[in-house]
Length: 251
Image 1 (cartoon, rainbow, N blue to C red):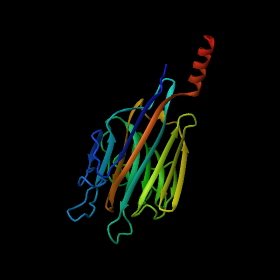
Image 2 (tube, rainbow, N blue to C red):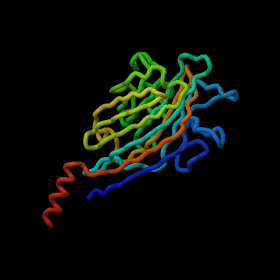
Image 3 (tube, one colour):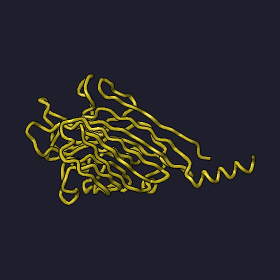
Image 4 (cartoon, rainbow, N blue to C red):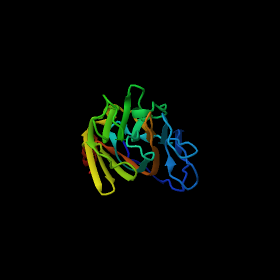
């Protein structure tokens, strides 16, 4: 019988350096009193080209098993600071779920989770994309829901709202409805995007969750402020009905 199984963590990065977080690529704390910096800067604090960083929770998450899948919710807060005078910074952040131990991917619009052609069949991500890559992205800065590719299944236009100010994103996935929903606030503006998809069809039973960021020829400073996450493995409706029938036989 599948049992309820919950994984939960919360990181407020200012002044906290967690021991259960794996830092890949550039991801580092510049000092004891800074946010988690995802892409490197030079000695003057200027962002560098073609960089990538990832922060991955070190413990595997049980995403599904026979008769059960997860409900999950995560809240990410970040800030992207363009170089002074730069009107075309890049590239942004993602929250991602992928097989445990997946290698760091390509820079630019692949965000360290997709390959150089923007593909990875076993990755789900929500991208907060501040740069328009021709042939891949819509012609606006956006929040996008990615399944196996950096060509988003659905997007919403965010204009310049993500540049230079704190952004808070709440991502939810419900196993019963298979609905992925994203709600984002930046200053007084809010944005929403959603997509329906059964993530258990592309993800293995055990997964890792993380945050990634990248630059390319265009650049920006990417700082992660906080990250909260909770997932609960719950019985699917069909399995729950079977259990209820089984229980009624003994009442």
